[in-house]
Image 1 (tube, rainbow, N blue to C red):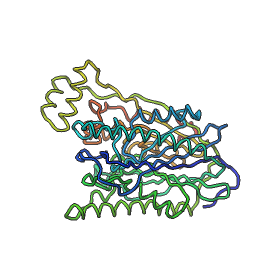
Image 2: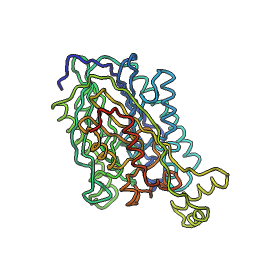
Image 3: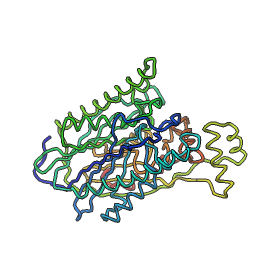
Image 4: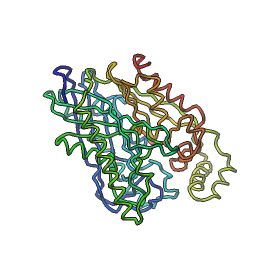
Length: 440
């Protein structure tokens, strides 16, 4: 990778093993009700700090977990601000959405459609507190390890994501990649993002693993000893690895071996594309990024009546459990949620690059629309950041319905699907956060 001799920017990198040393329930699949049975692959939190104190640096913490609850991210952001002065707009936490990582307190709290036994909940609470400490540590370590270096970026392409709602439906195949090198040009870190679910492994397995994102990081680091690789996820809420939709062999062990092989292969494919990008033309970044942050209230649709809740309770299963929890709120005199406070964030490197961070599980229509309305050559659209309140459907997906269009709310906790219009609220907020120079 070639870099310019000038345009030095202070950059720091850190990593922290976040693999629990005790059994714990894993998140992502509601059918998996027992605690973990071992470790296939260790999982990590990575930190990246960019900019000098005079510029107010930005900090990214990338975590291998299914989803970070809003309050956990805010707690860590507050801690980092108290100890470093970093504003909320300059701190972001992303998660890979691997379905083979520990449950966190209040992350998809209804996913199992039943109450979690107290002893198991204690382990979940314990790990959640540990993770907050680890995230704070890795953020502060990245800040402490800053030294002058070069930033470059490029956009590649990857092909293992497939629309899981519609055969031949839209996906975002882009692979934006940020490269960090020392002042002498030695590679220090790589950050890449791809819009696809981390669900190569199925719910029949109960081991901790980073899935394809974990293997992608391992492969990049194997090819470049001493380099730290970070993987985040784009707008892939309606995309699965293509291997998820392929026929599997008979027998649980054979299925597991096949799925694990696919996870490794997907990771290798991403790492190979990163390798190609490192050897090709990269665009230098000469500006320290500036962060912007805003919350927008996304309204929910008409709430069920008490009679409708009671009828749903009688259905049993996930529908009944979800309804029972909301009836209990009403009986305690607590109001039901009518809107969601949704965090949206952006970092801009002058007029050279804008990175958008959308919270939770965002469908592909958002990235495709933003790239059509803004300068796609200077735009990086990310999701699975800061909070995990559920699926964020586009107007198209909301009208179509189905799991991403509202059915998944049963497992995340909100009382009902979103009301029409949420897509425009999100898009308008992104436009406000970005400078006019990025508009077409």
